[in-house]
Amino acid sequence: MIYRVLVVDDFEPWRRHVASTLGESARWRIVGEAADGPDAIEKAAHLRPDLILLDVGLPTLNGIEAARRILAHDPSVRILFVSEHQSWEIAEAALCTGARGYICKSDSGRELSRAMDAIIDGGRFVAERFGGRVEKRTDRAPSNSRRHEAVYYSTDELMLDDWASTADDALNAGATFIVLAFDEHRSRLQAMLEARGVNVARAIRDGRYISLSVPEIVSQWTVDGLLDETRFWTGATSIMLAATRASTAEQLRSSHAENARPACARKEMPRPPSASSSCGTRSPGPTTSMSFAGTQRMAATVTMPRVSSRAFARPTPLSTRDS
Image (cartoon, rainbow, N blue to C red):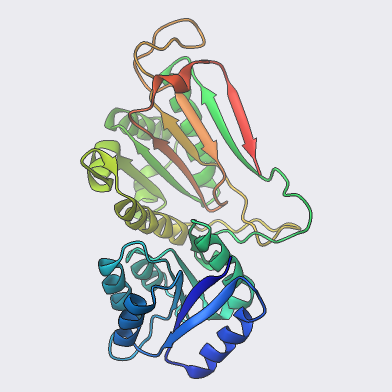
């Protein structure tokens, strides 16, 4: 299938470079070019491209405002920012418009094709320099380098102790720790860390300990009880960029140097009151934790409310892996 692309940049040699690069692939066809914000808005509406490559520094109307107006007219438009700006603040503002990705021109030789593929296939892409993941392409089948684990606990105490260990390790390594949980668990976790000698107040001040309340986040990210994709990505983007920026941990260096491996990230789901624990007792509190791949610069613990009881049909330790 051939996908139609609109290229928006005021630097004509760059547009020629993009046209030459995309011309090497049968997957892309450039259907239009624009050199300023108003022209981009008009051509986006008229041409209805599958993907827009959009610069930030446009004359008349900057790319961020142009993206807002394009998406206000048609929220389904897929936009990838390709900019010379390497500022965290600009990248965050661009992604918070609802754009699907952001890369820097200086990294385009390595990231442009992958970013376009990811977005056109329904995903999102953030430049590696901002904490995103860049996967190397290979003719071999992918290895199980990423994993998702579900861990079942008999008590909240065991779960919180595990969280505290994760947070302790992450903060000591200079990484950022994010916890999204109900208020009781947030308070107990902080108390456990302080009892271990962790300077939580300093970590909060440095932006490396981010504690978020489930009710507050749910109210911000949902509409009529359902997750709103735009609100979610806007909020999550700000949180993740801030977390990566605050981290002082070094990226892992290995033979797969392009891929930052996780310190650890966790997602906790509440067990329904009727579900039995692995010890045969009933536990009304959240007793399930899920870990998934992130980056070495942050660890996260997330509480997910309203999970179907079918997810807990087997209250025993479970680990799943995917590639």
